Length: 333
Image 1 (cartoon, one colour):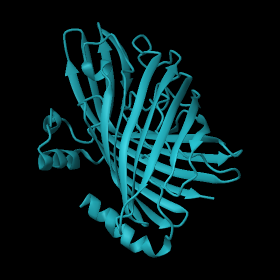
Image 2 (cartoon, rainbow, N blue to C red):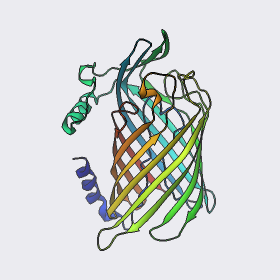
Image 3 (tube, rainbow, N blue to C red):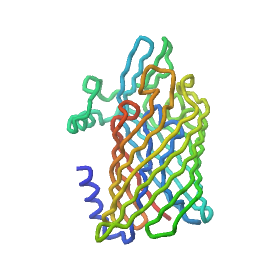
Image 4 (cartoon, rainbow, N blue to C red):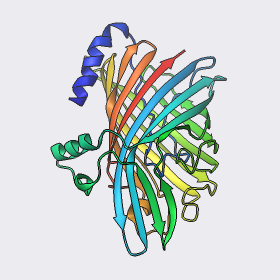
């Protein structure tokens, strides 16, 4: 049903797109309420914007989390739904250089997808954990260790998140119609959000990563395909969320593949992961790395406008949301 929707949209929009569709990573990352507040970046394209050209994006990520753990020393409850809307801009300031910024709006609530996720897991035979017995529509994020409450958030509402400034430098581009490209990207996240409401971390974070892609023309009427990858590191100041257990360095990466059988749409899948953000806990959900499988596609609504539709599933259970929905509407100027 999910891929049928992509193909249906593609058939509707196919008449208005006449050039090969670029295959880029989904502009998303781990949407756990304890992770999305830090400066973990999306992989992004390996091709920077040409000088004088701009790309804008409105991305919406809806993530539903349920995790309950308890030992003699620690208790952890993550139960709620987060919606993150990102307004992004990338602009080519020189032949090989790009600058940009991301403004996020973060909204928490009890959510409406608890039942859908249970049905999703049952249909695919995935583990349900404690979900069936949990209260529906609850918002509660809390963590306690050694008798001291270190996290307690149950207030819904929307607030501005942590603002990010971005830059990129084109290291290589072979100039072909099906290009091989490599770019160096960086982002600086500032603590403009609220750490008490989990819309920000209270830290200033710097990310630096390489992103590359290679595109291949396929024989006959099979269109083209691409592989893409990214790898980098994230440095964070202490912040205010579980600050005694927060790590200051993390690594991250993405590996993905896409196939565009027609100029109007592409199917994509990627694995995105990162190392642990926290330490000093008996819960592996805090101290282990995370890995997500993100799959879906891109539909060309016009020669300059595209829509990404994707779902993500946690490969390492508990380290990221059970299921997350990603929508990204991009436009080139």
